[in-house]
Amino acid sequence: MNLEYKTYLIKSVSEGDEFAFRKLFEFFHPNIYTTALRITNDEAMAQDIVQDTFLKVWLNKEDLPGVNNFEGWLYTIARNITLNILKKGKFYKDYLNEESHQSLLGLYRGADYELQSKDFLELLERAIQRLPTKQQQTYRLIKEQYLKRKEVAEILGVSPETVKWNIDQAMKSIRAYCLSHMKDMPLVFVLHFFSKYF
Image (cartoon, rainbow, N blue to C red; front, top):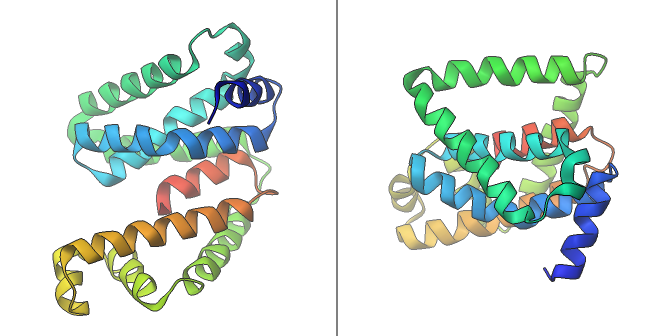
């Protein structure tokens, strides 16, 4: 992403443009997730750090025009959230579930969360069904049956490296498909589902 386009997106986000926000989210998500995963060694925790980071960016979007170094500002937010989560230790999951629930209620009290959830799960299933057979099998075994890569490798008769490649490709495809079909869903729900399932 070149500097001019990035500057344009940041300005658009500051004005409330959700499409521009999604573009920034897609671009910065991998780096923040990878860094958070390396620090926490926990995939769910890393995804939640990404969600909380971008939710904070969106809630403070009016401050963006005064931010001189967006990337530095973004990674500082991610770092602080990571440190706070690590400090919570064993209380993390209970805390996050409660915080997430309260945030959703507070931001979208009038929204029909169950309907949004149903719509997203149907969208997710369509995205999964579009995958090549091996990628689809790999995704379901890892994400739906919570098996380890080594276990999946044994079941499918492939190497763990092949499992990793298949799940990475599956996630990229699912992510792209879902994001392109979530234009009418409130942003807080997009972030919530993105973190939960991706």
